[in-house]
Amino acid sequence: MKIVDKLQLAEQARQISFSFEFFPPKTEQGVVNLFDRLGRMAQWEPTFMSCTWGAGMSTEERTMSICSTAQVVHGVETLLHLTCTNMDITHIDEVLKSAKEAGIQNILALRGDAPRGHEYWTPAENGFHHAIDLVRYIRQQYGDYFCIGVAGYPEGHLDSTSPDDDLHHLKAKIDAGADFIMTQLFYNVDVFLAWQASCRALGITVPIVPGMMPIPTYQNFRRMINLCNTQVPDTILQELDAIKADDQKVKEYGVQLAVQMIQQLLKQGIYNFHISTLNLERSTKRILQQLGRLAPDMTATTMPSHLTPLPLVQDLEHAENWD
Ligand code: FAD
Image 1 (cartoon, rainbow, N blue to C red):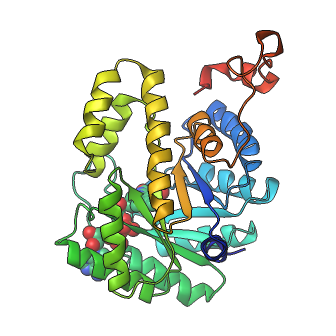
Image 2 (cartoon, rainbow, N blue to C red; image 1 turned 90 degrees about the horizontal axis):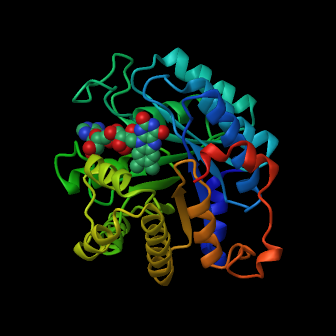
């Protein structure tokens, strides 16, 4: 099924919906652990799951295997991220054909960043200079078979010449045939809402799915906001600074912050949320529980200690990867 139809259904029914993003782990053991998680998280009935694509073809095999497992084994609609630079057209075509054969019907069409070790992005020689070139190519070659998502940047893309130019380039991707927008992570809801209003004013009518990243650790958060040049309200920075030495407190703060942001966005009529899980399970689970989408865990704090459930065997096997 096309993701855009599911996003529109959630909007029409005013029903909160979640999707989960994963990235391809570096090791075989990491992949095995992720497959376990996919199975458990599939039961939380996400609208879809997505997996990132490493620049060029660096993660091709693992990205495809994660996407086809989610789609075929778990029956969850899957969004394959695909970058179009540093790959020749025949290879892009092979990936699209394999996706189609695996029953994957949704592609996030991206330009991609500069490869590791290169400071600036430079256009590839394959004729694909921007994400719009991939959108056009998919529409030209595959008609309406694929549902296409594109990236949007509430705080502007780092390479953009101006916020207005960035918005016009986004509109051009929609006009070229993209069906929905998924955003870069953000921590300032007002900034997101103002940007979304500008998109609507420009005539962009497709669903816009906010990208949320529950804070995993203080260091990781600082690295991400520096990398993406994300604005973070001072109160959040101060509150985090006070607990930065305690990983558990930071994680819990991240959960509460995500819940609060989602509640603010729900009030503004936004129902679809994409969670960048960083391949971790617990924060996403806690967010869904707090928003009433999952039953709370029966843990030692909520039931007598003699009833505390034992960890699942698979959890014990992969205890080194607990989040
Ligand atoms: P584009 O839409 O091409 O935009 C890039 C820049 O070019 C912008 O500044 C835009 O304003 C400008 N521009 C666009 N069209 C034109 C034009 N015609 N003329 C002049 N300027 C133009 N990266 C990965 O490597 N793998 C992933 O899996 C991945 N997933 C992502 C998921 C999301 C939700 C987001 C937000 C980003 C993701 N990225 C991923 C990062 C992304 O590849 C980078 O941000 C990249 O720098 C831009 O990609 P884009 O598709 O937005 O590019």
